[in-house]
Amino acid sequence: MDSHNGSESEEEIPFLFPEPQDVVKKAKPTQTSIQELMYVGASAFMLVASLVMAVAGSKYPTDAQCIKKMSTWSPMLEAVEYEWRHFREEVPNAYYGKPTDQLEKAWGDIWQYGSTGIPDSKLNLLNKSHDIDWKYLPDELGGGIEAFFEAFHQIHCVDLLRQYTYRDEYDYSDNPAFLRQPNVFYNHVDHCIETIRINLMCNVDVTPYLIETRGDGENVVRTDALYHCKKFDKLVAWAEEKIVRPYNVTAERIRAIEEVKIQGSHGGHGEHE
Picture 1 (tube, rainbow, N blue to C red):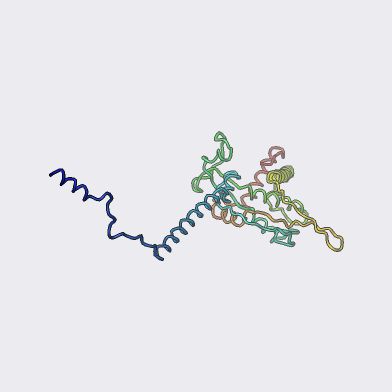
Picture 2 (picture 1 turned 90 degrees about the vertical axis):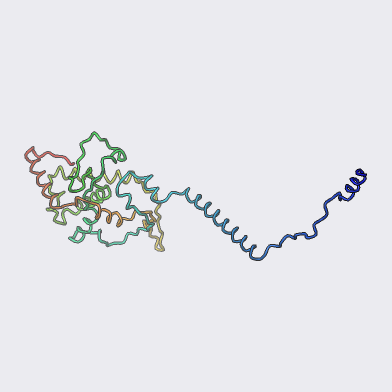
């Protein structure tokens, strides 16, 4: 009996579970959800594109990075900015021609800057030895090793050669360079020629210049080349702010006169510093 009842119970159990009466149908995506997906996708694409561009851009150094990599250390590097310029020989200009009081001042204004102090911890960056007895500025001027800047030194040298060229056409009797004894003065001139030569050969300009053939058959050299230049006015502005011991022409005259007196007492022999 029990066995029979058990079999009936087993027969009542279906082999497969019946399908549920209420089948849940998948909801179709609404217009709003599609727009959200498109927005997320576009945002992700823009993010990836920005990252790719940033990584690609990082392969090319900035001007500031190039300056530090390609230059000897200098506190003035912080003021260096570049610009592309076409140089055209436009004459007359403030620096061109026979000397006048105005022209002499114009030249002086682009090189007569003094010195500032640099920490001795920077000597290794200048390939200089700590064993040398360097000249230091007094504490009231901020201390540090007294440093001048080659840009102004080199322009001074060009100016001196210009003045030497016109020495018979202008009164340079109060110019410190001309106050020194002849052998010292000529040593100074030779030093300036050598300074300019070294600088030109070090910073070799490989820019091509062209020759224009005009209708009348005349050949004209075109030196109006395109250059990537440091902005000189930025460096002058830096010097005006940072120089702690300005150039003093009166002090230079006194120094020159004193040197002449000392050299005269030693038989007139001296050499350029």
